[in-house]
Image (cartoon, rainbow, N blue to C red; front, side, top):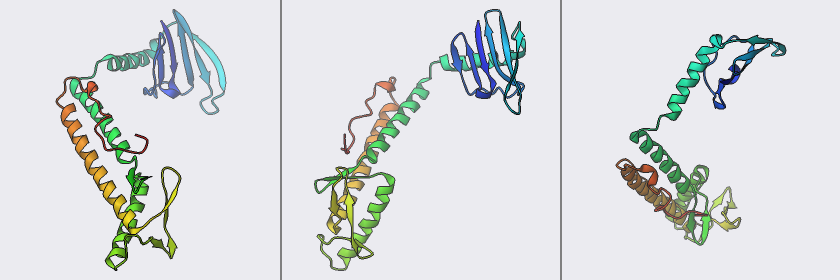
Amino acid sequence: MNVVIIPSDGFVSVNGRSFSGLDLSWIAPEVHAVNWIDVAGEVQIVDPITHMAVRNEEITDLATFQMALDQWEAARVIADTPPSLPERRATRWEQAKAERSRREYGGVQAAGHWFQTDPESQLKLMRLDMKADAVLASGGAATDVLTILGQPVGWKTYDNGVVPMTAGLAKEIATAIEAQSALSYARGQALYAQIMTSEDPEAIDITTGWPPTYGG
């Protein structure tokens, strides 16, 4: 049996299979690493303050570090235990939600251009939509370019062009975002129903049926 233990990393490897993040805080702080090959091994000792190497100590058994081996075995059992059907469904649903977010923030098309719909962009567009409402309510035209502090608003689109943000365009974008959100939600709910009743959730295609986004 070949064993490597690195306490500071919570790392234990047995015969080449390793797990990290184990709680090895019970091992003395001066132990930097344990290396065991077949029937003998050594412990690398460091200064616990400077972490400079001090010496290597030979060991003839792993009794002192048996708990680390037990922790490795517990991690192996968990890793080798197939997930239950509810766990598989939950995992697939998380993947579907990630796809829904990607789609919902993947841009909308309006007036022949693709506009960003990431959270920050949506907030800015929402403010422009409100400004458009004010312009139209005061008798302005849909073709009027919105202004901020007297300066006309331009929006850089996905294709790197800059288009004037008119009141009508702001409203069109807001409508497109609302539609995209509603369609994404509906598709997500349909997938949820499929996933939570499926005996093979991994086989469900979570990449189709969404509203179009920039780049597909």
